[in-house]
Amino acid sequence: MNKILIIGSVWPEPNSSAAGIRMLQLIQLFLSHKWNITFASAASASEHMHNIESLGVKKATILINDKSFDDFLLSLQPNIVLFDRFMTEEQFGWRVSKQLPEALKILNTEDLHSLRKSRQELFKNKKAFNFLDVKKNDITKREIASIYRCDQSLIISDTEIDILKTEFNIPQNILYYLPFLLDPINIESKKNWPSYEDRNHFITIGNFRHEPNWNSVLYLKETIWPLIKKKLPTAELHIYGAYPPPKATQLHNEQQGFLIKGWAKDSKEVMKDAKVCLAPLRFGAGIKGKLAEAMLCGTPSITTQIGSEGMLNDDTDWNGFIKDNPEEFAKAAVTLYNNKNIWHQAQQNGIEIINTRFHKEKLGTPFIKSIKNIQKNLENHRASNFIGSMLQYHTIRSTEFMSRWIEEKNKNN
Image (cartoon, rainbow, N blue to C red; front, side, top):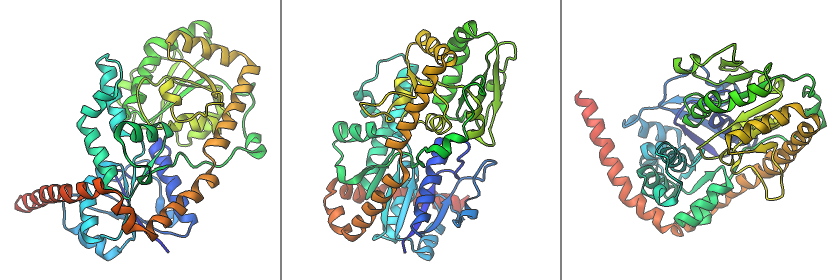
């Protein structure tokens, strides 16, 4: 039986973020194959963290830049270590390599942070996107190095797979495309959906600490929602998300129908009640949990090219409309809200997207098989990744010495 250690940058919060949903899906997949799972994190406990112990997962609190982690590793003896985001690989990867050199190392990227951060900076500086700027970014260098140092990296979007292969020449054998792992939508699922007539209002949802979400809320408030409200004066926009700061709650306006609702205990329930989901994302990366959840709830959506990235086949229509222009976005929202036939067709498109791109069984089994294949041929697999070996050799020393310096400094303090 595989014994896997997952090192989380945060504790999983599936009702707060797509990253939390993704992590819970991975945990459930490993559990379904009878793997022994320990989830460790240096992060503080959070109010919305999932009770993973109820699933049969062991929890452990670890320290950064502390030798106690070495002892923890040697005591646990995992044969697989999964790093949640590249920052945890930087912090703990060299220790894993030193203490347990035969352990398989997997990086769960969540999304390409370097792509998201570069898009965000370019947007704020009103510059057109180009990969030269991405490659100049220090985060890009760190993230790509982390991908090379691991035996396998999980990439959530096929768009990002293409970017890594074409722009950074990363070999296919250390990348693995693994999007959301979702149960297919069937007749029984649809029976639980409220009808078009029983739904009211618009919804947008997303963790307020995630910059693309906060930017989209401001975009709705300042530009898009006034255009929709002019055509639909009785409609409301319900804005849900974990950790709303004061600057967000101050946007709440009953007269404008712009309602900041805060954290939703059950995001699916509030999504089911809404008639249309709005996600005018202007930068970001990965695939968007809010839009997948809208499809799972039978709620059509309107988003941007960035929002739909990595979620469509060439021959698939969106679960509503994809519009980058704010006037066209608002017009599409009104059309989708008012036209029952278009609304139903959009809902059907969402079913097709979920069932063809995110089918849990069709994606999960090959992934587990790929891990087992690498385990059987680990020496050859690593030998084929010379750049990774080179980075491991050089980086392990620099990160080790920096960590040891911090460790000694902490002792003296």
